[in-house]
Length: 485
Image 1 (cartoon, rainbow, N blue to C red):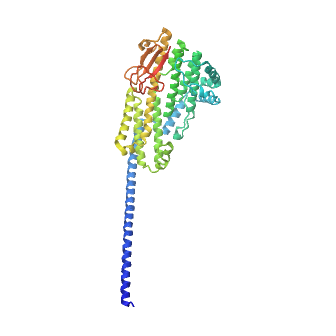
Image 2: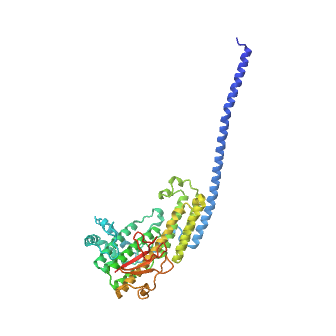
């Protein structure tokens, strides 16, 4: 039988064992709790530190942005979209004979025509290949074209009235920012294609006056966008001018134009793209970008809607970082606005060098530099390519005017000139510059006719080699205007 003392001793040992067990069980829980508390404290400290750093960055970037805007205000009178709207309104009020209403009426008449099944099989407007200079359209195609163009008779009548206007400037609500509607842009391109098709038909039919009128319509449609403050409008204008140049090339080889008509065509074709129009659109784009950054900083703009970043990511972007990006954007755009006024070769070289520096900085600077230039890397290359587009368009206009001079020489002398020097000064004031080389435009006379050319983007003299899949002369070819006997 167990004694009372033994029971007490046993109970004491059990109690000690239980106490020891409890103590051992509490130890890991206490260590885990300390780790959790340390993590929480560290996280809070880091968040507070990041908050302070973000606040300092926001204050610093905000102050620098205000200084930048002040500097722009002192130099220019167009900085924000409100400024753009004010200047555009002033421009509209200064016009005595704005052709906007007449041009819109012509576009409405065009839209009223139901597209026929011929649309997709015709050259220029549809999927058919545009014939090379000197190649006539088949008789069955001419028959289809006659009926097709007849359906747009009202459009051409109203275009004639619109073309009589000295200028056309569209009303724009630039203050709407990225919600700005541009309903005329696509319609102008369609109208230009239809007018080009009419020019091609008239060239084959030997109707020189209709050729001149149709090409004049195309140029007028392009000029309707020259007073717009947006890059997209200037690029569409360049595309429309290119359509007109293709028709000039086709008309010259069709022998449809008289000596008088050739002289009038030469006077009609602009000598260059006005870089002040491009400069104005860059100022407008700068104001549009400023509004974009302002909306981002206020959390009211979804950059993800432009495909530039996931929408949820926008809420985590530090406001100071956004303001810093805005300053970099303004610096880049302002420099480009000034470079536009330089001589073409110098402007082209400086713009390309600046792009190369930006790309090199981003590549060599790693993640930090990429974060600094995150938005610039996406937006700015497209801006710089706009200058290239305008310079190429100017070069093509110079080639076209030189080709018209050569066609006039042939009309008067029964042959193409042996060199371009024969065109000066009777048909040309001087031989035009080749902005993609260090000299003048090139000339090659051959058994088929002659070729006036620029070195093109690769800067190499390929002796007038042409490839319709490489019209800009990017590699192994030149930028060419062809005349066929």
